[in-house]
Image (cartoon, rainbow, N blue to C red):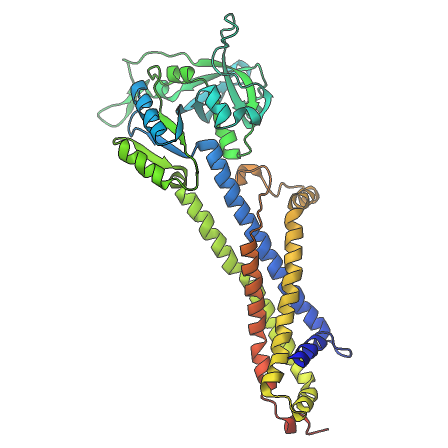
Length: 434
């Protein structure tokens, strides 16, 4: 086996012909394929992990709702007590779409806004909202320490502050979707008419107390925080009511037993885990990662075909050497091992170089993106589309191992046909003109 390995290494760099250039091209092909695979798999894994983390951070481990209606105060207390019996924590929340007026004389409107209301202490301990504040403070509702201050405070996002041209201390108006839809009604003909029995409601005025950024652009773009009592007034809910309860268990990734127990003990309520609520998107990410792997592995497959061409050329130029080796007693299996090892070495060297290149690019991915964006004059990673402020990536050793093993196997398989041809050469034919 030693002489086969020696000759395989020797044939990678011949002295007087161009096969070494072709071999280098094959190695570069494997390097490129492995590097691209590692980069794409790392980005897909990082994106999925970051997305899951942000989902848990902005939603909770699970949610409990009463289908078709809000949960009254007594129901909220009963649900929270049941959750405590199962060692789970929870907080009542009020969520709903609103219409925001802002700008000079409040002439501008924003309809794609969601109000989120929960106790301040829960926003601090569960959503860590105070840690994500960029300006101001986490103050909601009326300032209890200043009875002369009648302002109702809210916390908006940096995206809203930019869109609405607001800063800490500025005011904006909020219309409830409940009040707005109550102004009209459908008639028997299917048309819409003014509801004469409806009451006129003035919009609620809020003062910006803080500006946050959670780093998840779809959440930052749509959600602002207010006090539960202000939200209840906006949506005509009784005191202590909630549209749902956010819950947190011991382990967000292993909570199916908890969810089943809560669903059994809370008949009439819908218990939904964060994975179930986002199942469609998570399945898309999983399928997309697998499809990207199978599509990009063709880059390595092309490199394997180039190895086949390289070895066919090498065997043609080394016909006399192969004949001499056979005349000296080398077996067909020995000749075959020489060229199979050559393909294996090309795959091994290319995979090692590709792994190093892929890891290096992942480590400096943000600097590369910033530089490319600066050169091109375009944002190559718009956060409004990708949800995050920076490109996430996570290198999983198992993924790297699978990529490297597949690449080496493909390159080795690409050497089998030329190796079989070399093994079938007869010494008499190879040395006929010597």
